[in-house]
Image 1: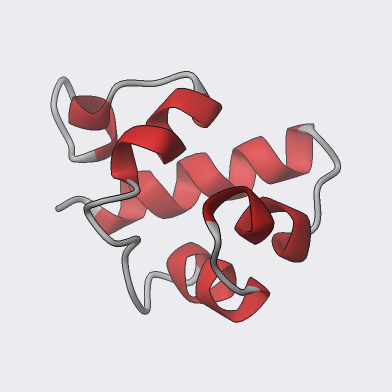
Image 2: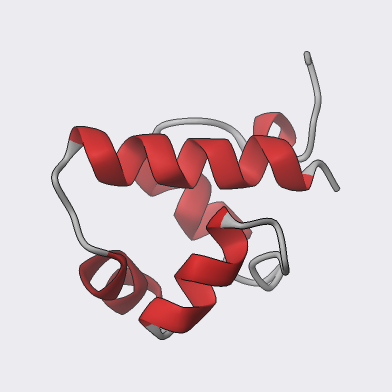
Length: 69
């Protein structure tokens, strides 16, 4: 799993939409602390919510996982 790609996508999306980590996390039923860890590459989102994250970010799950890098 390409944690750099996931963290960069999440951080970029949040900044573009002036969204807090709390609000972003609420979209997926996770805490702001979880989002912070994703963005700092300390952990990755659960694979079960990757499709929903990809949909919100407007990318494919494959892209988040490093395809077509």
